[in-house]
Amino acid sequence: MSLEAGTTVPGPIGQDQYTNSLASAIENAFMKEWPAVMKSAAPPPNDQMRLVFIAVAQGILRYFINNNNAITVTVSGVKIAVVFDTTGPLY
Image (tube, rainbow, N blue to C red; front, side):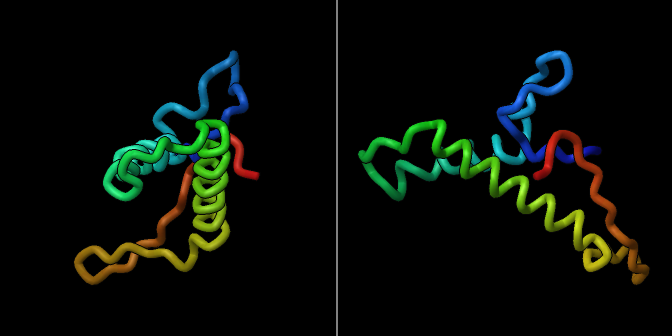
């Protein structure tokens, strides 16, 4: 499975690179938590939120790619290296 950080930049043949991305999942979680924390306050404008969510998602995936040798999974006592495969831009 390839991880998609998310961006608003159109992909190949105008393909949406935000839907089903990590940034989109962060946005969805943010919007679901907003009412519990902020009560009746209106959420910030979408463009500003999306910029933050995209930057966070791209930063997280860039960090994992640059440090994948530090991330392992242990299965039955055997350490297995994790390699991250991503699609879309990571700045």
